[in-house]
Image (cartoon, rainbow, N blue to C red; front, side, top):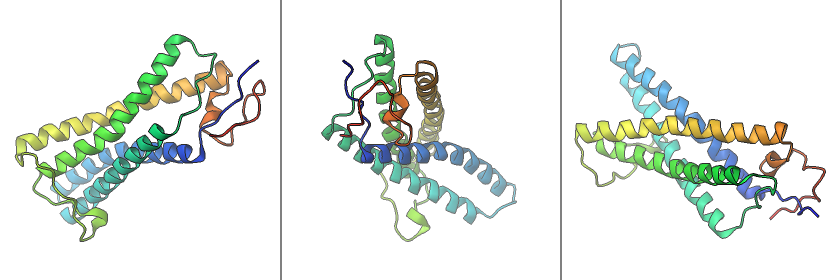
Length: 201
């Protein structure tokens, strides 16, 4: 007899989708930010615009960090639905690996961005207001700022690679394996007919 189908809780779903949208948007926003900076050096836009654009990126990064830490805390206090029994051992290993890697980059990328900002000479004005993000105790040198910035930038590619693996696996299970795993995290996707009614936890 198959086990009752279980979705993630509403709070877990909210954390998942809010963070996913924000962190993916920040990758492309970061690339656009570089274009704005280049336009400023070419005299096409004022540097105040660049400062405002960067401040919004940093503000959103701190929001992602806080949300990711809150999501991790929620995850440690609430047992997630079990993986589908139809998954092969290597698929379960890959699922856990990508899951942990996502937590690493969700927390690590904003921290590395904070380190980069702390190493620079310009203050971070949260929400472009008088509220300033405290600097971390890191070397405020050009070399260290470039190194931290490179690592922070590389995290964008890690996010896209993990996203591709995650989405690809989810679509495979939904449309090829037809095991209904996608319904665990999307409330409007119907649960598999072979399972009992939803048991949200």
